[in-house]
Amino acid sequence: MKSELIINATSKGVELAVLEEGKLVELHRDPGETSYRVGDIYLGRVRKVMPNLNAGFIDVGYERDAFLHHSDLGAQYKTLQKWTKLVISGKQPVSKIDKFKLEADIEKKGKMQDYVSSSQLVLVQVAKEPIGSKGPRLTADVTLPGRFLVLVPFSDKVNLSSKLRNDKEKKRLKSLINSIRPPGFGIIVRTVAEGKKSADLHSDLSDLMKRWDELYNGLKRAKQGKRILGELNKTSTVLRDVLRPECELIRVNNEKLADEVKTYLGSIGSDKVEMVKFTKDKDLFNTLSIHRQIKATFGTKVNLQNGAYLIIEQTEAMFVIDVNSGGRKKGATSQEENALITNLECVDEIARLLRLRDIGGIIAIDFIDMAKRENNKKLTDVMRAAMKKDKAKHNIAPPSKFGVMELTRQRVRDVAEVKTKDKCPSCNGTGNIQAAILVTDQIESSIKYLSKGEGHKKMSLLLHPILEAYLIKGEIHSMLKGIWGNSLRTNWEKKYGIEIAIESNSSVEILEFHVFDSNGKELSN
Image: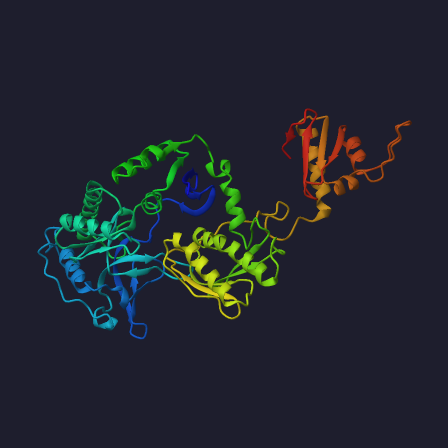
């Protein structure tokens, strides 16, 4: 499947879009330097421990306390805490941990208060970004992710991604990583490491060890509530995590950014460097009609090419997606068959929208009811196949007897929100427009200024037809006699000694007006 990565630099930051066969499947925005991204590491202070929740609230400098559950402490929590205290106190002179004495693993079903106490300093990592009114969710199981590998301190295990299926390749990777694994560290091998050479993996591991040194040095001079080690910027993170082997082109509209992308790809040993193309374009998203796709897919109603449409609503507890047929499908001989065809046609689009809009939590999809069990099973199988492309963890349940399919999808960031409606030019979004009775006063004021102040003797007005009719009301015009009656226009012409032509256009707002000179140049009013 042809895939492209579009990087669009704007005055508000960097926008990144992943296209598959020209269709938008992922959208990311990098506003610049931001805190509390997934992967950021902080030195936090425990505000309070909640035994009833088996969790604690941690101050990491955010406006709201962050949340740390016992299950997120990690098996080696006591070892990490011991190392943190020694580094802060200056009693751990080197970053190497090969000879560091490990503490016993904590109990999986233990109690938070047994390991965490109020005012205690803890080394934590952001697991979920702040969402809505909630602060960040944290983990004390600190890891450092790379392009191909994930570095796990105070471990000696090598684990492989569950998505690696080839037994021969799994054996090769495990043997290779065991040979280069630094003492005191465990390694998680990511899916994208499949088929990579030893040099690529070794380079990635070297970069991770440098980041560990940065963490060590940052912790020595760390202040509570301050970020010790930040994740890569959003652009680099997307390049690291989203870039896939099938990607054929990377378009960038900023020359400096294009060079940075090439440098980064070169540093991680990617073969995509030559695919980076600088395009001198102020807005790539507009040129490639990505803005149009965004507007069409982020609204409440999403229309499909087959005539069906989806209604997507968010409640406090969940997202709800309603599937509507829009009419009988060609070739369908019964209501059951029509429902099956429509439901299957909507599956790919739903899977794409979940990924694109980064919808997470509980999701209820109200498919068109089907009576036959085999049809519901087929729908579930197709949905699971369509969701395989999604890197977020998810679980899918078969449709209930009411035709509702329930699924959960991992959410680590706030749901993507895109403005899909334009502001009304008449009311500016307030719902109220200016008093209609005043519009003629405004027009006259503009005419007065342009004639007396600027010296214009001829001008034309562009108006809505209704306003035009009001301005020329009372005029009597004869082609033969050239007799004109009394109207607002004729009164203004006599009063200011000018000629006023009027043009009407129904596309103009009803109380909107434009003034032009005799050459057709719009005048400021």
